[in-house]
Length: 588
Image (cartoon, rainbow, N blue to C red; front, top):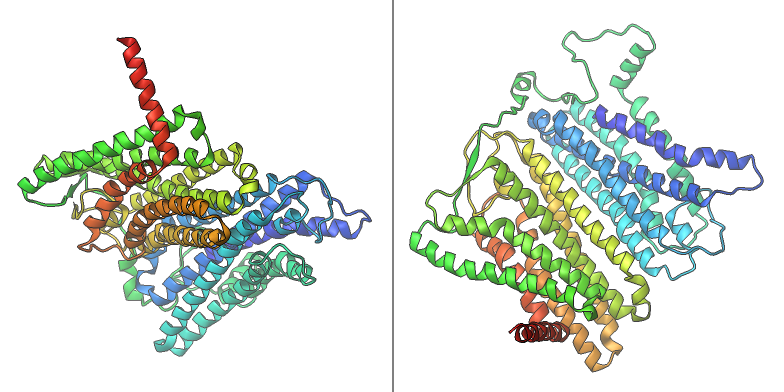
C-alpha cells in the first residue's frame, strides 16, 4: 500500500512540475509563449505522468481489493516481485501511451494560427491548430486517452463495489478502517479521472469550463494526495512524528518497512501470518504434453493430415510474400500489410506445428522447460502482433473506403512503416510481460500439460503457488487486448457498411468482398483468443479443438481467402508463373 503511495507522491510531483512552473512564470510576463519543442515536451511528460497515475490508481484499487477480500493470501498475491512488476508495467504503459499521442501530433502540419487556448500545451488544443483534417487523430485520441480513462474508472468503481459487498460481514472497526481507506482513494480517483473523461472522451472542441477543470487536474489533485493519505492516516502520522524527532511508542512486534515490502492488513489473524510466505524454487526440468490423442493409429493419420496442412501454410504464405515483393503493382498499403500477415502466419504456425508433428511419431511427448518458455514467448509475440496487424488492416480498409481522396496521404509509406514497427513492438512488449509473469512462478510438480503445446494458462496451473493474481493479469492483458481489438474491428466494419450505402453496386461488391474476407480471418483468430484468455486458467474439452483452429486452420485461411478470391493477386501469380515458365524455356 505504502510502496504504491510513494509512487503516487513521486508522480504527483512530476505531474504538477510539468505545467505549474510555466504557469507561474506566465503570470509575471506579458508574452506567454512556448517553443514548439517545449510544447511537445510538455505534452509528452504530461501524458506520461497522467496515464501512469491512472494505471497506478487502478493498481492501488486492486491492492485494496486483495487486502480486504482475500487477506489470507495477501502476502502471496502482493509480494515484492509482483509489486515491482506492476510498477514497471504502469510506467511502461504510460510511456507507450504518451509516445503514441505525441507520434500522432508530430505528424500534423502546423502553419498557423498558433494560439493555444489554455495555460499549457495539451494534445486536443494543439491539434486544432493543424493545417489539415484532424478527424482521424481526434478519433484516435478518444479511443486512446478517453478509452483508458473510462475503462479504468469503470474497473475502479466495480472493484469498490465488490469491496463494499465483501465488507457486510466484517467487524465494525475493521469495516470502518477499510471504508476510510477506500473513500480516500475513491475521492482522488473521481477528481483525477473526472478531468480525463471530460477532456478526452469528446471531440476536440473548446469549452469555457476546460481551464477550470485543467487547474484541478494539474494543481489541485496532486495536492489531495498528501492531504487525504497523510493527515487522515495514523501510520503516516506516527512515521512523520518519528521523522521529525518526536518520541513515539512503537509496538515490539512491528516490522521495518522498505520500499518493496508489503504491510499485512490489520484484519489478518496472527496465527495465519507464518503460512503466507511464498516459495520460489523451481525443480521441474521438462513438461509432458498430452497431445491430441493417445491412439497411435489415429496419431499417424493426424500426422499425414497436418503435414499437408503445414506444407500448404508454408507454400501458400511464402508464395504471397514473393508475389507481392515481385509485382510492383501490389506495392500498396493493403498488400504491404497482407505480406506482413503472411510472414507472421508462417512464423506463428512454425512455433507449434513442427513439434506437434514430431510428437505424433513418438510415444513420450516431452518438452524442456527452456523450450516451453521459448514456445510461449514466440507464440504470444506472433499472435499479439497479428491481432494488432488485423486491427491496422481494418483501419486501412476504413481509410480506403470511407476517405478515398485522402487515402494516399493518410496511409503513406512512412505511416505504414511506423504502424508496422508499432505492431511488432506491441507484440514484443506483450510477450515479454506474459513470459516474465510465468518465469516468476515456482514449478515443483506436476508437469503434465493437457495440450499439444505450451501456453501461459496451461503452464501457470502447474505452479506451486497461488496463481490468482497471475490469472487476473493474463485476463487483463491477453483477454483485454483481444476484446478491445475485436470491438474496434467490428465498429470499423459497421462504419464501412454504413458508408457503402450510397456507392455504386460494383464498388460496393468489391469493398464488401474484401471486408468479408478480412472479417472471416478476424473472427476465427480472435475468437480463439477471447475463448482462451478471457476466463480463468482451467482446462475445457473444447480447448484442443479451438487451439487447432488457432495454430493450423487460421494461418491456412490467409492464402486461401486473400489469394483465391482476389483478382489482383491471381493476376500477379499468373504473371509470376508465366515469367518462370518463359525463363525455363529460355534456359532449355
